[in-house]
Image (cartoon, rainbow, N blue to C red; front, side):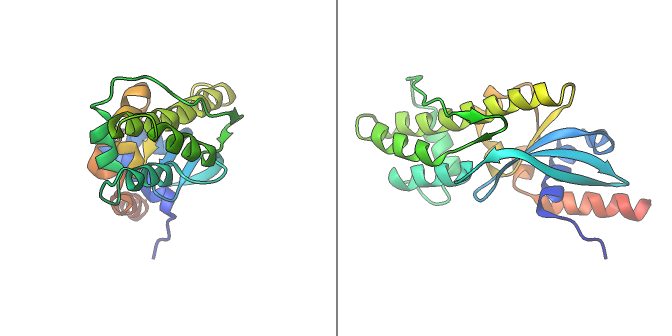
Length: 199
């Protein structure tokens, strides 16, 4: 019996899918972005496994929650991630609420209020893009701060929100898994189990 955490599974799935399993043997930074989680992790080798230490992320609602709540407000199907993503591609504005980032942490609850206010004066497509730009700005700022605190470490993205096309464009210098494996921590658990069995 091998025991793995949710985060370990997501990190391994992303690295495997992106063709960067060698990073399992090196320290690196990893974002776990999903409906319930927005965590910035320091990932370090632990034998053939990895140790994940939370060093930053959101202090309240997750990026996925904000995106889903935006989708519900816009009458999109739930879960709303891929629908908000598709709708945002019709937008032309570049407005953004710059989320305050204290070190490696930020709050997204205030962004929800800003998105609701924005929706009152703008189209659904513009509102979808606005919400995503706010998330991307927060993640990018925290990542920049993390790169200063942990120089030279690669940054890996995992979790359902990591399949978002705007985030992938904004963070083009990071490592992303195939979208299908952004949500699949079971594949990562299989990869980790194989590594431990092989010794």
